[in-house]
Image (cartoon, rainbow, N blue to C red; front, top):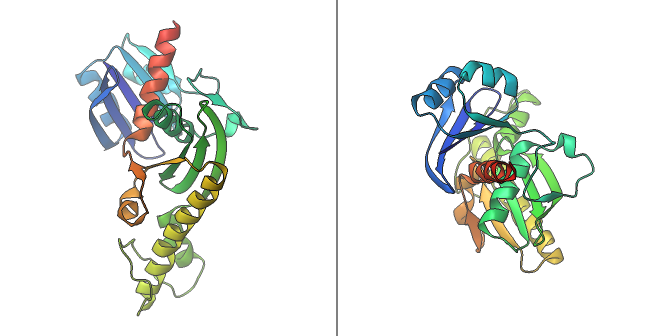
Amino acid sequence: MNVIVDSGNTYSKIGWFQEEKLTRCATRLSFDELIHSIRSEIPQNIIYSSVNRTGEEFRKALDLPVRILNLTPDTPLPVRKDYDTPETLGADRIAACVGANFLYPGEDLVVIDMGTCITYDLIDAAATFQGGLISPGVKMRFNAMHSFTKRLPLVEPEANAVLIGKSTKQAMQSGVMNGVLAEIEGIIERYRHKSPALRVVLCGGDAAFFESSLKPPIFAVPELVLIGLNRILTYNVSLQ
């Protein structure tokens, strides 16, 4: 069994894999809850990806005789990186692309990850990560309008927001939700000029707001990052 740890600034997410199959996952775990969950069902291998605590902190806190792979920019990958600053490349971005390449090998793919930021990354049919673009996420846009103005309220996302808002709240929701939708459609169209057969893979916490509004074919894979991290782990185990 493999345990996959994707740890953010506040909370962690764990996936349990039997070989390549995700059997279950847990989200929004504190660091102590993370450690307790792993100790309750000890795996053979762990991959640890974190923007917060170091791999050494995790290893000491866990204190178990298991193989732990700490994901760093130098970790061997089953894909190639054609990126000018690989040391700055976010682990979630590369993991999502590794996951997409594992699920859809031999295809040009754009991976759209809708989290705090929205990332659009291209991995080609030769399994080369080409890079992409980063834009503000949904909640970041709402927070920006509220923080940088004196009178605009803090508004929550709304699925299927009306196009023509009849109130300030509706107008803000329309601006963000329809603006993000138009951005996604526009970026996909421009990427398809480079690769007409491009497959679009969607993931991230805010993907559910837009999945049904996007023109098919769009392939939503909610646990794409976990799948990619597990693929990186199994690849590194195979090298040993």
